[in-house]
Length: 289
Image (cartoon, rainbow, N blue to C red):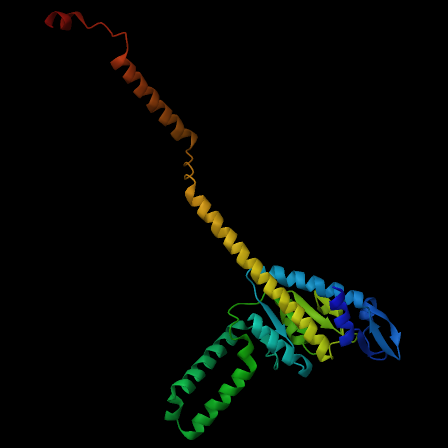
């Protein structure tokens, strides 16, 4: 923990925006002012980061994905690197309207991307005219640039990680409409009410963004290991249940009464056949015998 705090301070995550450019809602997260620049309380940053890591680990352990969104230049490199390592969806280009609220249309565009890549890989695109080949190539580049990061996202994510709430307000609005929890790195000019778990910090520093994304992706790996442990324990319980005897089928009171009646009748018949006392035979039958 001490090393993480030192690393964050060295990255300058506690430096906010100028005093004249701040959001009053960020007041609880501001420690003071130095040279007309707001200084963010590092304790609030650590608190938000630890809470976000715990939530992400639990979300991934439940089998859900976490989508990272950061279209600003300072965040693209870190998000693409770490999200590719943990195999989580991400958006680093322009956020397309309806990426979450109109997810079916986005999936159709991803199918189109697979079709275009199939044409390119098989060489069938050579059968088209030069003009059509140029149009298909441009379409492939455009769709790949906008949707490559979420091509493996087959369902809505369980959480959304956003860098700079002012820039990604459309993504936050869509997540709020669908009830998707949001985790945001917020500078002093942002609105913390847009995030379910705010992480106050400098969202313009490449080093600070790199550290935050790295820590959150580490929580993804932790949640994935917890998911594997849960699956293994569930398999062990299933094997143990297979060795145990099958549970007896419950019967209604009426069926039990009928079964008891049949049992008593059979017992009475057996006692009659093998009992010590036998009923005297009628006289006529005895004389004939």
